[in-house]
Image 1 (cartoon, rainbow, N blue to C red):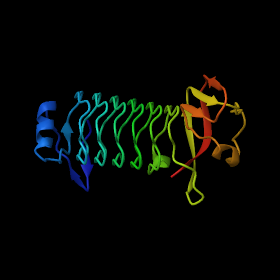
Image 2 (image 1 turned 90 degrees about the horizontal axis):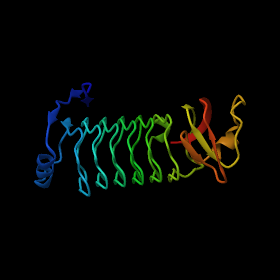
Image 3 (image 1 turned 90 degrees about the vertical axis):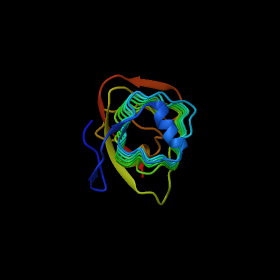
Image 4 (image 1 turned 60 degrees about the vertical axis):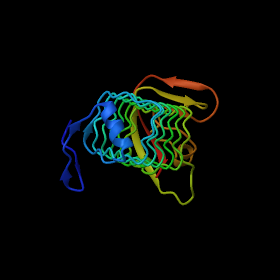
Length: 217
């Protein structure tokens, strides 16, 4: 894992077992910056407001864990199982969530600025009022049935381009052969790369496309 820095200072990694980590947390400790918890197994645990800045949580099983208000800035959660986890109000800035499973996860009002969501499964996740989604990396991200941020007249629009190997469109099949879709049509799409819900029947495209769409910050 590459060296991680926060506020200009390097974070020194250290290893903890699951039981040690939980015991320290129960005693009131919240600062676990740089901790190596790779492959840890936790379930139905409350870790509210925990500081896991730059933590190594690769491949961890964290189903139904309450991370509300947690600091996961630059944490490595690649391949982690966060099914039904609570990440509301969590700081996931620059976090690595590549190939992570966040099915039914609650990310209400979390910060995803520059987070890597490549190949991440966010099926039926709550992404309402998230911050920084337009700056996140969404490459082949699955958002089937996810609750996305509402369109706001005051919201700033960003035109983003993604690559999709498999893009599922529900409803009218938009012709990707066209140079680009109009902004009006794009703004009506309520999903992103991966699986996109726009109502109606589903069509699967199996080639690689460059598509344009608007996301809201």
